[in-house]
Length: 106
Image 1 (cartoon, rainbow, N blue to C red):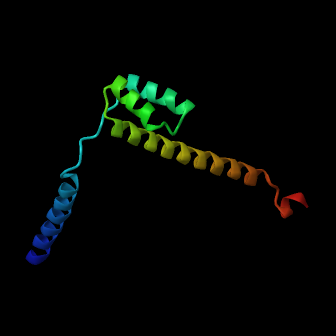
Image 2: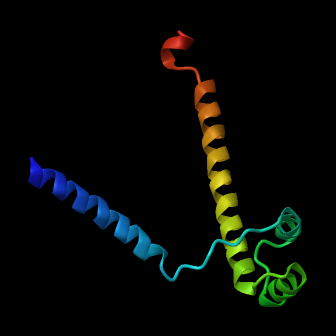
């Protein structure tokens, strides 16, 4: 029983150590202000793939690094793709539930 408890403690510390190693060298999460998000969203509506020139101008005006803006647009496009898939799924479910089965028609 003693071996098992020390083995369990070892596993916990291993997984914890792996998690800590994953964070080492990782940049802190960028916290965007609501004003920054508002501007980024309004640009996204017009152009979801802004070029380097637009990203650099946004970086300057929003006091952010250009690479953070690039990642923001990348994440925002992924979010749009996800919500498109969800709404398609819901529309398909609605169509399917609207279909009458053979038994119901008879």
